[in-house]
Length: 307
Ligand SMILES: NC(=O)C1=CN([C@@H]2O[C@H](COP(=O)(O)OP(=O)(O)OC[C@H]3O[C@@H](n4cnc5c(N)ncnc54)[C@H](O)[C@@H]3O)[C@@H](O)[C@H]2O)C=CC1
Ligand SMILES: [Mg+2]
Image 1 (cartoon, rainbow, N blue to C red):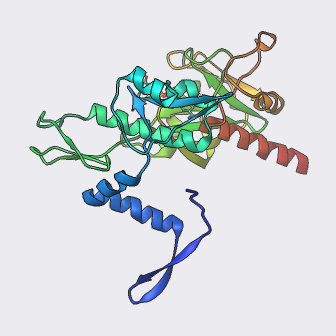
Image 2: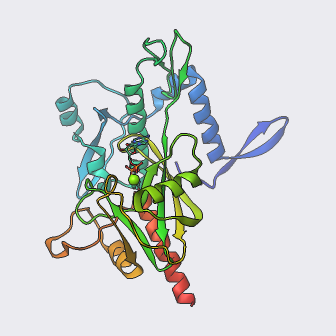
Image 3: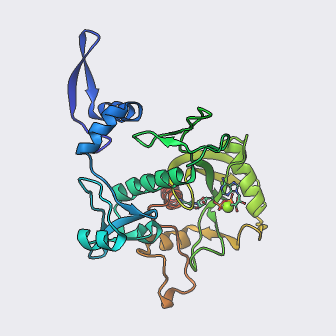
């Protein structure tokens, strides 16, 4: 269901009619499912299911894409029988990233993150006793210590640093060949987003940034659940010399608008053709790093056109 549905309908409230958008109705319904075990049980009878095996979703190949079957009931069969019966395979989510549409990938990201969290929180860290999941899967409770555990995301800042004409991209040795991304790092406990951005940039490339601007955020399930907080920032004029922290990064460099624009036009998978062996590769559209880089290109292109 679209979050921005334009249909409205009437609901009686406090003796008068109030307009509630379908988005608000949906949000209230999801809240009810988290709180009301019986409502959730009923919803499961008519709801649809995504199937996972060891955190890998069941996908059906369709040309160059993957479709995500929505099943009307949960079943429990051995893996191979399930795959044969449903005409699909359980595939690593990371491998299928390029072949999923954005709605499916967002739902699968959330579902996988939730399953992983439940798997890792079977026991209370205080009493050592087994915890119990509520019907909606939105929390786990320890009957002995009464502690309630809620699914967590680790805040991560991701920053595209610019010197006005170029942007700074970096790579880790684990990245596919040629791939460069924006600087990312986990927030330390007690830190604000601003402090984390300043520290991460200083730590990873030895630069001080200013003019911090929040751009967007994204839930990212790999390797655990992170809330990616994406920002733009600039370096102080004349202070552009990079000192790469080789414990964290393999390389970092400044890239021109032309280089980045050309790389953005390159489509498809993260594998370079032999003829492009030395080319710059950028993160896929699904990743918030891609959004940051695209936004930087658009802003810079507009300002150079206006000049
Ligand atoms: N969606 C996107 O566009 C992008 C997402 N990312 C994600 O951002 C995350 C952080 O990026 P990195 O450069 O690896 O972070 P980082 O620069 O903070 O370095 C990772 C190291 O930080 C430490 N660390 C501190 N708190 C941690 C925590 N809560 N969980 C795990 N390690 C923690 C560990 O020693 C770890 O080796 C990664 O999980 C990566 O998948 C990174 C780039 C792009
Ligand atoms: Mg990092």
